[in-house]
Image 1 (cartoon, one colour):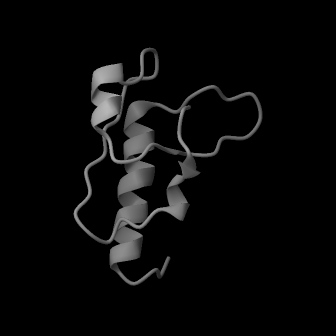
Image 2 (cartoon, rainbow, N blue to C red; image 1 turned 120 degrees about the vertical axis):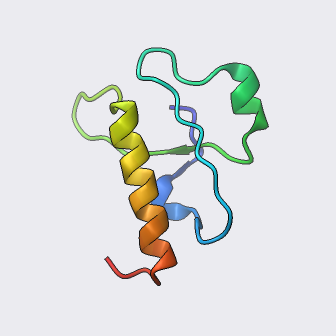
Length: 72
């Protein structure tokens, strides 16, 4: 929720690591402080959070899409 930019505004073509917290607690402040940047996945309606596995899947798919040359 503290992300500065949306996931599809970032470049994941190089070396990338995703820190993904659980739905209830997120990431610790210490681990968040180690990140180069904070990103977010947009959600519509009254959705508060995504399941951690679903969020990981969205991010890894975007990284793979970019590495294929941006083709969907």
